[in-house]
Each structure stands twice: as structure tokens, then as C-alpha cells.
Image (cartoon, rainbow, N blue to C red; front, top):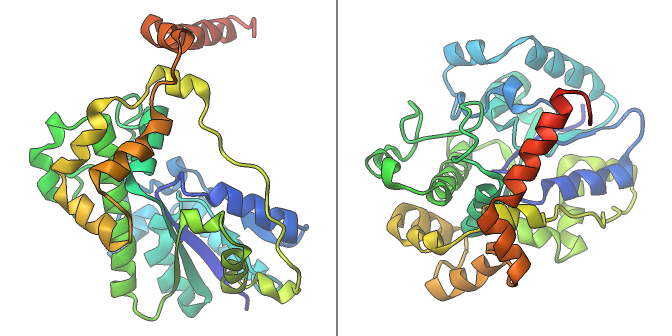
Length: 302
């Protein structure tokens, strides 16, 4: 039997790059290489955060999840299986109970400031709040419930930092809970620095059975200009210093959390210079454009 690999990440960690690189290198009709194959509405990854209890797992596992597990068991007889998406991390305890040593976990993390800024631009914890993904300190399985006393005063950026902390701390917990679980940890930035890291991932996921070099994808997820102009990071970035738990954990992972480094890092998520970006931001241009597009689609004109 070949390995079945799930991924732990917050998202925004380079896993789309991994999926595209693996598809370009090993993709064929029989190989299973996906990214977020089951969406968050199916796995309810936020609701089932740290789902170790078997009785709760029975509530979590719906027909789509069970059908996928059965399909993977069959397909893994002929080749390795990997999903690089973040939406299936809640399934790891259940899948490990079902698959044992056949299951492997790829754990990818990124600097918390970059992750939080990226999610804040998208609208997480401001426009989007679904319990399908959004972990809060009121969650019954929250690892840092002490954030509840701060929650109402926290900005969306800070709440995204909290999300980063919960996800990465739960990944560390997996290693403690299942010491025999095969888990590979890496920084997102390492994916783009050296092919050596990619080669190690190929070996870990079992795709080295094809004895082929991996082809590095040239595609990257871009920071869209409309996101920078609509919801830029402002001075709220400095609020990260209010959360020593997050800073301590990030430094343990090897990230520089000094104000000087963070100030330099955050610039790429702030409002671009120039009169036009400022005018579009102040006028709500992108929100208006989105409203017009939705209105046209409703009446069938777009």
C-alpha cells in the first residue's frame, strides 16, 4: 500500500504551488494529487477543530468523507495519494484511526504576520465568519481560550493571528498525541528556495516511486491590487505585540517577531503609494464595482 498524505496548514502557505508542481511532475489518470478536494463546507474544519473524540468523529464523518476514504484505500494499492489543502486537517485523527501507519501528515507553516495580513486582505473575521473555518476562543476545543477576554477589542488582523496560533499549536499537538505518526514539518519560505526541499517532499509523500525529478511550478498566488486598495493593513499590525502567546510560539518556530522586522514585512500588505490607489481606497471604488457586478449577474446581464 502506498502512502495517503494529508496537510496541516493555515492556508496561504504555498500549498497551491505544491499541488501544481506535483501535477506537472506526476499527474496522470491514476494518480491522486489534489488541493482542498473536500471543501470546508463538507469537512467543517473549524467546527471539528482538534476532533479526537470518537463519538464526535462519528458526527463529523458524513457520506462524502467516508466515500473518499474508501476510494483512497482502493487507489492507494496502485499509487500514492496526497491532498495539499488546509480544509482536511480536521480529518487527521479519524483517518489515522482508520489507516494507521499508511497515513502521513505534511505540516507547512508561514510567518504569522504574513498569514494574518493575507487573510485580513481577503476579509476573514470581518466579512467572513463561518464556523466552517473560523476558530474563536469560544470554541469548546480552543487551545487558547484566554483570548476570549480580548476578543471583542481585537481587530480582524489580530483575530487572524489567533487563527494562526490555534492551527499551528494543534499541529504540534498532533505530534505529541500520535508520536508514531509520520509527520514532515517545513516552512513555506523553504519551498521556494531550494529544490532539495521539494525532493524531500516527493520522498515523504511516496511519489519517489516514479523515479522522476519534480518540475517546479512557475505559478504563484498573487496579492491582487484590489485587495490592497480595499482592505490594506494600517497601523493595526503593531497590535501583534499584545499577544505574547502568539509571539512565543512563532519564535519557537524560528520566526523573527521583532518590531523592526515585522514593520519591514508588513509593507507589502499596505496601501500602495500614489494618488490613484488612495482615491480608490477612500471612495470605496472596489466595493462599488463588486456591487455593480453582483447586481448585473442577478438580472442576467453578466
